[in-house]
Each structure stands twice: as structure tokens, then as C-alpha cells.
Image 1 (cartoon, rainbow, N blue to C red):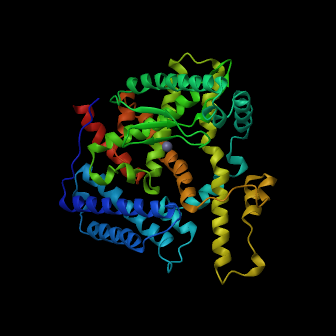
Image 2: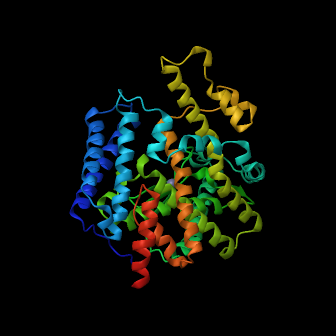
Image 3: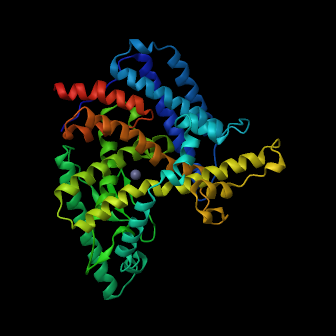
Amino acid sequence: MDNPSWRIEDPIVDKMDKKRRDINIAVASFERQVGGDPFPYASLSTGMDIKKGARSVSRYARDVERDSLNAFDRAVYDDMVKHAQMANSYYSYFVDPNSNMGIGDFLSNFFVRGAYQGFLDSARSENLPHDLFKEEELLRAGFFSKTPDSLTICYGNTPWAKKHQENLLDALNRAREFVGPFYEARGVEKMDYNLQLGPAGGGFSYWIGNTLMAAIDPDRFSFSQGRYDHFLPGLILAHELGHGHQGRESNNLPKGLSPTEEEYCVSFHGACGEGVALALEGEFIEYSLRNSDLSELDKRAMSLFWSTYLPKKVFQIAHNLLEKKEQEEISNPLFPESLSPSAHRRLSEITGIKIFSDLFSMEDQSILDSLQQMNYQIGNKNLQGIVSRFKKDRIPKELRINALLQGVWVNPKAQEDFIFNSYLPRVLNE
Ligand SMILES: [Zn+2]
């Protein structure tokens, strides 16, 4: 379906949108710098742009009478206020050496109050699906036990390797055919895209908006009975295309809510971007369980892979947060020695699993990488709230996904407000 375009009416809100764009550009640049070229570096000028942008959005915000705005402007306004708050805390926590903001405060400002404790609680044994972990791991091990690793296949030159390469490409195309009808059934406008295998051994799948390319990690194809399975790569493809469609549909909205490819993947947009992609995965599973000719075992595996994907990430997140907290406590000169902290001891207490008390039981992750991991959790929770309201309000299925794809928001309340008070009334009336 064709989705409507949206313009900001209020002149000050419009100015705020332009400033928001400046913040997005600065944050994206800062994250590329610390990501390394090839070594990490950072420009203080870029850092100052983040702060200046946040200040000027907040200053404009004070001149706006929120309650007199129209429904669309109000949602955008609420989103920008949150965005500036995020930028402000981002500057304090990552740039300003004189700030003594701790990880707990930072996450409260960046995501939601209580986020730090929420992440630790979600790693507690009573909050985790231990039976599903068990079933999923055994099933996965079975599926992959006869799967040669992708480096051997993709860089091999023997007839055996070449045969497997062909087989992989065949499964990749079946994944495309598997996903296509779902997006069509949900009324999402068709998109021509390139589909490739990701780098062998890379361990990740991704979407590139500028070249409209989805790349699927070759190690996600399990090999059984002479051919590669396509259901798991299909699920991943449904996710990556979610990013693609969101990027394209967001062109209907003002610039600040429609980040370019370079701005899309920064930590500010991760929660909405991943939240939407995960929600689409959920819809895709629901659709496929009814409409595909997968075997019962494949269906079970696909559902299990999906439902354990996020809970499996909470161990690493809890670890990263505890280590961050430990570093902060150690570097605080007022911290009494007698209370010497131990992140790993705490991790093993929280999870109830002894091996995590070992200092080397987990890899260290940079704080920005770990922020991206948190984005999946936060975003999923945010979007699930919207998805359950769709179900409660009996919103037609063809509108649900389209609604989720409109704009990259940072404030889930503003996104919900936009969907239910601007988008849906307008498309339902047209
Ligand atoms: Zn994603």
C-alpha cells in the first residue's frame, strides 16, 4: 500500500527537527571514529556538536506550547525532547571527562529509568526460560552437527566444496521465496533488493540501505539430507528486510525521523530499528507456522531459535554492565578497599550459574557494542507494547507492519502516539 507523507506544521518544531538531524550526524561520526580507522580516535569538535545540538533542541523546546500542537507535531516534539535528553547524557557519559555520571544514571537517561537494574534482573535464573534453552540447544546441535563450516566451503576449491557452494546459493534463493509472500500478504510495498551470502566466518548478517543489499551469514544454514535448510536464513532475511523497508518507508517523515544509512545504525536508533525488525520476525513466524510447508520439526526449531534469541543475550549484557560498574567503583577514590567489588562473583550470583564467576568465562565488549546489544532488548519490549495494542484494538493485519515501518523513533510513547493518533486515523479514513 501507499503510505501518506507527513510534514511538520509548527515552525519551531521544524527547527528542532533540523537540529536533531545535526545531532544524528555528529553521533554517527563519533561512533565511526571510536570504531577505528583502523584504530580508534575521536574528535572533540564532533563531541561538542552533540552537546550543542542537544542544548539547542532543549532551548527551542521551551518555546513550544506542546498542548497546542497538532497530533503529528506533538508526537514528533515528544520524540525530539527524548532524543535531546539522550544526546545530553551521551555527551556526559562518553565525551565529557568532567562528568561523573555513572552507568546507572546514563542508562536511565538514555533508555528508561531503572534500565540498569532491569538488565540485571532479566539475567536472574527465575526470569529465564531454562527449559527452552535446553531444548533449543539440543535441537540446534542436531541440526548443525553435519554442517561443514562456511570457511571450508566458501574458500574451498575442490568439487566437494563447489557442490556445497551451489547448494548454499540454492538455499539462499529458497529463503528469498520463503519470505516474499509474507511481506506481500502484509501489504508492504515491494522492494527489489540484492541478496548475498555474508563473509564466511564473519558471524553476522546485515542490511545495507544504499545498495539495497541483504547479506546472510552462511553459518546460519544447517545442512541435512543432502541440502541446506532455508528456514533459519529466511527468518534472518525477514529481519534484515525489516530494516530495509523501515529505511524506505521513513522517507515519508521529516528528516530527523528518517536517518540516512550512515545515521541509521548508531546507538540512538538501535532500539527502534531492532525492535521493529524483531517484531516483524514475530509476525513472520506467526505467518509461517500457518502458511508454509515446513516440517513440524523445522517449525519447532524456527520458533525456538526465535524465542530464545533475546534471552540468550542477557548473560553477556549483565556481564558488561557489572564489569562497567566494577571499573567505576574501582576508579572512584572514595571507594573503600574493604568492599572490593567483583563483577564475576555478582554475575554468578545473579544467574545462579557458577562458571560465570570465572574472570575469563566471557569476552569483554566495548560499551558501545554492549549498548547495541541492549537496544535489542529495550526495542523489543517497546515494540511489543505497540504490537499488543494492535491485537487489542483489532487493527487489520495489512496495516500493522506498515504502521511499524513509519519512521525511526527514540521515544516509544511518541511512536505509539503517532501510530494510533495520526497514522491509523489517516490511513483508515483514506
Ligand atoms: Zn537488526
